[in-house]
Image 1 (cartoon, one colour):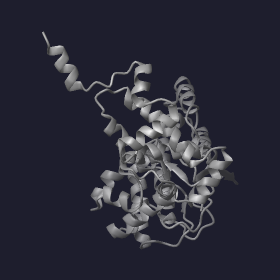
Image 2: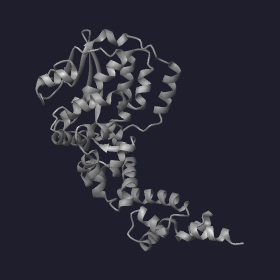
Image 3: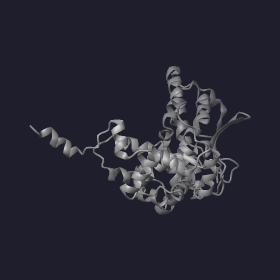
Image 4: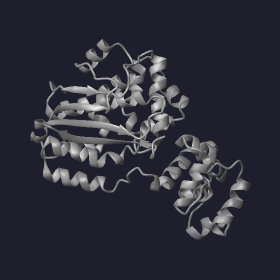
Length: 350
């Protein structure tokens, strides 16, 4: 497994439409690989890279399209980079743009790295992961090559072609199919995955570059948390917020979403001086404050949203957290728990 097995749901950009064009039900594909369907609408969500690769592999099988990942990457193009694209598009040269991509890729993908190397006048724009035994990884690597090709064509020109497309694995389809999709036959079983091209391209200026806009976007991206195992408590909190209303916010379920062992999860959390139960309590406490600010949500609904089977269990937990009952806390906070219908009736009295 990769050392940091997480990516953001931004990687699913365009998946729903592309999967349907391949004759697939995108929601079913996501559920089959333990990826929340809601992540299609939340690009900032954290996903397991292993599950993402599994999604691509499942789609390959169900669509009977061995080049599903490659074609999906070509379809995504620069859209998959989100705000990073606006940063790199406003760099001064293509070389600086690719360096910005390399430096900021960890904002959205902690499972892979972008390489940019120049040897004897030849540049390699590479895509590298630490894992080699992940099911579906060849699909992810071909997808990365498709995205990289579209990126370079956006920066250099629509007719740009690399000198070579390198893939670490053997062909997944007839090589003529690759030729048709890419405009060039890849080199298979290579030492690296990526694109080779003349390094003179790197000094080419970007006509639309804006230093002011570049600095503005750089400042925005600096506030985004990079994907790292140190930030695992944040990943757990996000998953808990997604899972609590379903009543499935258990450590086994969260660990499964991350594609790691529950003991491994606990160990990582202990290294950050916390625990799953502590994060669960903290997340529930944060959510309940928000829920109670909405008088039209009943206590039964609040309990359900927090993953409790009944109000009495929720009430005991609430008293343990805050040292006061729910209604006592509401009075102290100036929050009315009067039902909306009752309040309307009160207003209607002469």
